[in-house]
Each structure stands twice: as C-alpha cells, then as structure tokens.
Image (cartoon, rainbow, N blue to C red; front, side, top):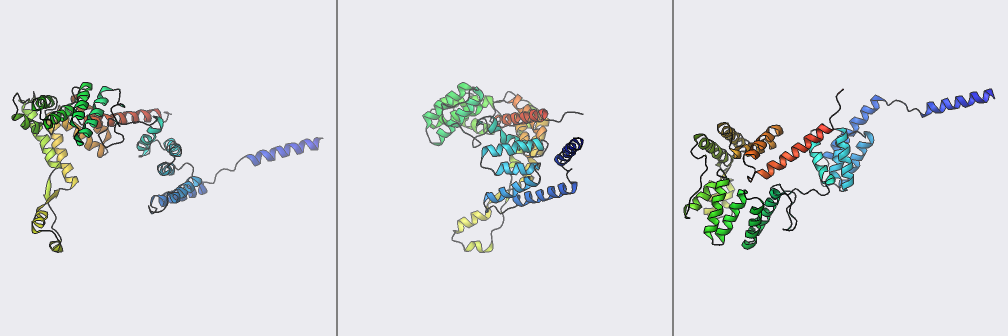
Length: 372
C-alpha cells in the first residue's frame, strides 16, 4: 500500500511538472518579432496589382509569430472588407499601442462601429455624408441650417431657384445669423430678378461677415442698388484696417503665381494654332506650395497680432496648424475663432475638428496607464 501511495504521488508530481510550460526562449521570441516585422514590410510593399489575399496571408503569418504585433493588427483592420474583423483588429491595436502615432486615426475609424452609422453632416460639403432630402435633417438648429444650405446649393446647381429659395428661408429660420445663407439667398433673388429682396440679404450678409472674402464683391453689387451699403462697425479702427490688409496679404500669398515653365522645342509642331501656343507660353502657374504657405503664415500671424479679434485669420491659422501637425495650437485658434464668429463658413470644419480633438483627448485620459 505504501509503495502504491508513493507511486501515485510520484505520478502526480510528474504530471504537475509536465503541465508547467517551459519559460519562453528570449532569443526565439526576438527572432519571431524580427520575422513578423519583415512580413509586415513585405505586405506593405507588395505589388498593388496582387490580390488582397496575398497581403492578408502575410499579415496573418505576422500575428502567428507575434500575436502582440500592433501594426499587423492595424494593417489587417485596414485590409479587411468584413466590418466585424476590422473592428476586432482595430480594438486590439489600440489595446496594444494606445500611444502609437496612428492611434488617433484608428480610434476614429472605429467610431462608425460604436455610433451605429455615424453621420457627419457638419463637415464641409463633399465629405462623408450629405443629407439625402429635406425629411432627414438634424435636430440641432445650427446643423440643420447647414444641411438646408447644402441642399439649397444643390438646387441652385440644377437651376431650381424656387426650391433653393424655400430651402434657404428654412435655413435662415433655423439660424438667422448664417452669413453664407444670406449671401446665397441674395444671389438666388438676383437670378430671379428680384433685386430689392436680394439687396436685403446682401446687407445682412455684410453686417454679419464684413471680413468675408466675398464681402468686397457684395459691396460693389450694392453700389448699384438703392439703400445703405453696410460697413464693419470697426471700420474706423486703424488696427482693424491694418489687420484686414494682412488678411488680404495672406490670401494673395496663397494665390501667388510665377511664370510658366518653357514649353518643349517640338511643341510648336503640334496641331495647335499660333494663338494657342502664344497663350500657353505666357501662362503662369502657382508658386511652390511651401513658399506660399510660409509667406501666408507670416501675414496671418501678423493679422492676429495686430487685431486678435480677426476671426478669419484665426480660422486659417487653425487649418494650417492642423495640416502641419500642430494640433494643440490649431485648437486654440479654432476656439478663439468660434468665440468671435460662431456662424462663419469656416465654423463647420473648426467645430468638427474640436469635437474630434476633445473626444480623442477624453479617450486617451480614460485609457492612460494608472500612476505607480
């Protein structure tokens, strides 16, 4: 009996030892990581004409070697046409690498999954979604006004002026301070040969947005119509006038052109007429973007330095900082601009950028590692 008990204990000890996994070999783990990274690079640089399944196979091998390879999860999320698979890989990427430079973009790719479809109507037209008709509009008056404005633009493009008028009247009922709505409605009335109605909305546009890039053109239109041509209440302020000049300097810098490149010698033997060739030779082209941006930035910075209340310059500096990767600085400009001119045409993108930034910062704070 005693020998049988000893045998049982020996077998139990052996089983316990066998069940204990051997510690991972650090050299093997490192070799697997290197191989996984190589597979990821192969998938990234694969000939785009090859089927997506080839890239997917490489990325799955990457995860088989290193299940915690965050970038392989991100790449599979991008590659997959199955929304559920994409979501799982994106979530795993964020769990593994919340501080990765791409983490914010991946987090935003997840928002349609968490918000059940997620409409972004308050982005400028041409972005994610445009309202399909007048029956599916936002409850928020500010957003609803912009949706109706976008629909009115579609009506104008089709020359459906009565429909455009009706939509713009509803737009301005939702937000009477929407300068763009007054501007478009003024032009609709001009096309309908109702100049007195148009002038009323042009004047309101100038009252709301005296620094708008179309303001001078509207003032010229109103010169031929009876009644007062509104000017900014700050028109007599020399600092305001100086800031306006810097604003125009910035716009001019972005539109600056240089002489066109000389045409090839054999170009003259083409079927084009002598007049067309002469025109092509004299054509100008835009200066390099980096030069235009640098010069424009100096002008816009001078604008807000001279007059910190010039919302248009804050908006443009915000856009420049967003595209330049200076997110914190961009949000300061956007907050300042929205406080000064919340209904400006640029407010849509500024509001969207701020919502996105604040939501991302809240997620980061919630997922920050606990202090030791």
